[in-house]
Image (tube, rainbow, N blue to C red; front, side):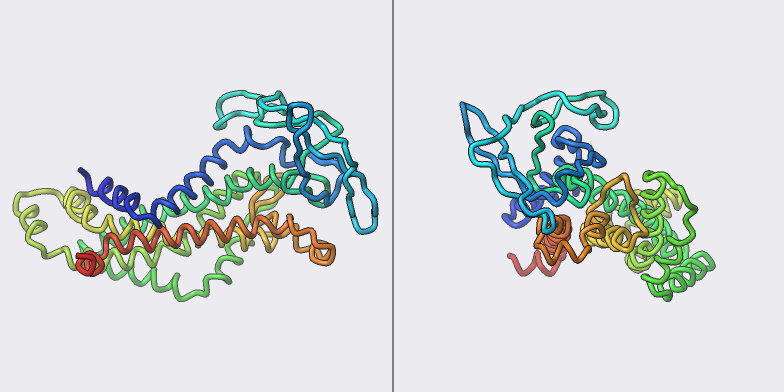
Length: 352
């Protein structure tokens, strides 16, 4: 059994670890199949149904129906149910076209209703867009940004820290001084300065990758410093010295002997760092510097929900992206704690 499988199996054997892994798996599956699960596109508007509350669903004539509403008070956007009236929900019906996984042309959706009726499971926003569909599409950016960013951090952090710790000398000095310089600059100000250098009229995909690069640039230094310290402690171990005597190259020693011994830390660090990327993207989007329309992210949706009308008239459904961010961040932090308990020798000793 490999070390990776051993850690994964130990996480599943712990109730808390199994719970958070299951929750995160559901979130990522929903993001992966967002096109199929969403009844509308993120830019699909209906100005006649702005700030519509979540629609109720009821059983009628042997099938599920979505409740019809009427706008009773336009000034306060108060909708009232039209008793006894509803639109049948069609499952696996044809709707707008999309590409499943970005590759397979498709037009089937889990559920739809015929126009002009609309189904708003989580209400609508100020332009009548479906909050449920935007939440699903937004999860793609908010969840994937952490995985992409942490992959960059782990690669650069290990390469810079591992090589600095193993070779030492000038490489070690230059690398550590550069890291200290970056870490000495306040992260928020550096983040805003780097984001302000973006050229205008970038595509959503370009903005996404630039944000990932900025957040990775701010975070890789801490990982590199810890990897350097761990590499220094491994540098004079017998198995490393034996590999050198046998004539193995430095790159092979770092890859085959150093990396496996710091892998546990990298796994824990990754799970604890992903929330930082999610919150960083949310902060940038909330300030209007992150993901832009017509794309959707949880941070962008929160930014659009900061209108005082949302709070004064209790449009609570527009704050659901904040709840999604909260649950995701807590889940990753709990997963990181579980992983830390598994790989920490002290915890292993106390559990015996």
